[in-house]
Image (cartoon, rainbow, N blue to C red; front, top):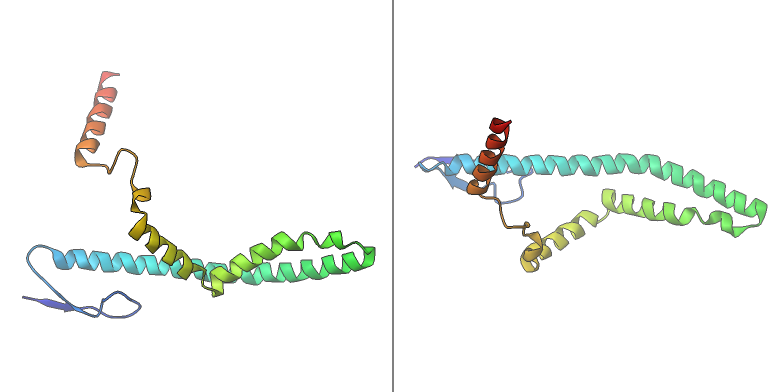
Length: 148
């Protein structure tokens, strides 16, 4: 029996264990799962990095807008001029939470709760697609194209 030692680099789900290789392709499947998980982690890292970069630009805009609106409100003696700061502050807070806060952990926790307790919400209409369903659709489409 062969064994493959996988690198624990950035893999956070038991990747450092020894995965036994058998003649049923389990090692190949496990490698595919590990590769899929690494791709998901890289995509998430890109999303966080994009959010952080966007936050730099939006933070600058928000700061300048807040300073300008405050100056305008003082100059015109009208506090209503400050109203655009309210929606902008929600956007800024969301982006900050996404880039540096705990938003992703809260989303992950909510997703795990849904998977554990509300999994009926995840069911597809008419159930999961089967091979037979695909074959029926393929046959009906091929008959449709043959008849014309």
